[in-house]
Image 1: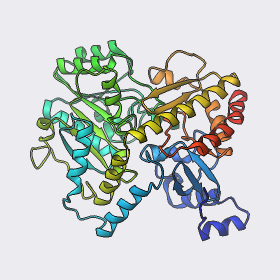
Image 2 (image 1 turned 45 degrees about the vertical axis):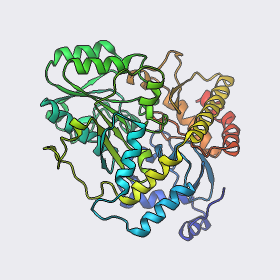
Image 3 (image 1 turned 90 degrees about the horizontal axis):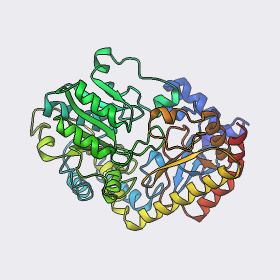
Image 4 (image 1 turned 120 degrees about the vertical axis):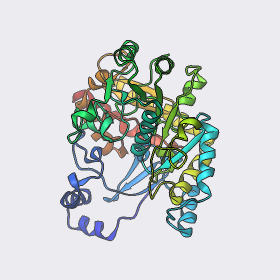
Length: 451
């Protein structure tokens, strides 16, 4: 793959200044920190962030004109590959008819029907623009339904950046070494109970200690924002049973795993393994449902969802909610995410993870690879025991990941710029993309060993 460099970028290159470095300097002068999402600034891995100008299939082209195999996939939405022809054509058709109406349009219901077909407990849906909005709305519904104030979340789980959910939130906070966020009042923080993940006893103790005050437990269906940490066998079932026994609801955050981990998200993965006897009350989606454009959703049982205005007293609204261009991208992506696409995702993920494990083992680099459906991540940990919680994830070697990341980048492979993230393949990761990864791995494994 090759990509055209813009005239401005070419001019910088001719002056002998690395294009990405100049673009980073320019961005820092007008954008806070030079980035619009913190993990993009390469704080965890060092070096200069790449500024990408083109994506096609499994490949990205940066402003410097160099191609990379992408293992970020826009943090999940590029399930079919970048600039997939059917997705691009759907977006172009929708844009031709208008970028937005601030009113209803027919495709909204069609996308909602498609989601509900895959995830039956999403009986009713409400589209929003971001995963943060989706989880915030789910919590508002839960508090209205139960008339209770408290929310339980797990350390290392990320549910967006609304005030009550930023404590021990993994992902960007972990990457930057922040325990929480300034600007969140003590009163707001006190309404969130943070528990260790996969800890059956701590969960039961919280319900006993706060009897009658917990509105909901919110959990990533499988944690993917501290690296991939799946629920321990039986944990989701116990969580659901405990919550319902104590009159609380369960909110399953599938913003990242939804339609990524598998055709019905990680709930579907667990269902197929017989591990989830009861569905969550509310579920949130993002990433894949918008096909790379800003779109997310909250869904759940009809009785709960009907608490939202105009059907009920819980207010939520947004000018861009259900934007027709984003809905078109989501529809095309989900339609293209068929059995063949998931088979390719499964195969490609297994190939990549197998190559990584082989090279790290050959270089005597301690590590562990963990899975959630088609998602996986690599933990540079000395202990071979499973990583089950945020404390375990925090014990990984950031120095080894940093060395590994930069060697892979030099070899033409773009990894997540943080050790606290999942890795993403696409259905477009073909033999050529896998070969590039294989070629880059020996040097990267050596770099990790000596780090």
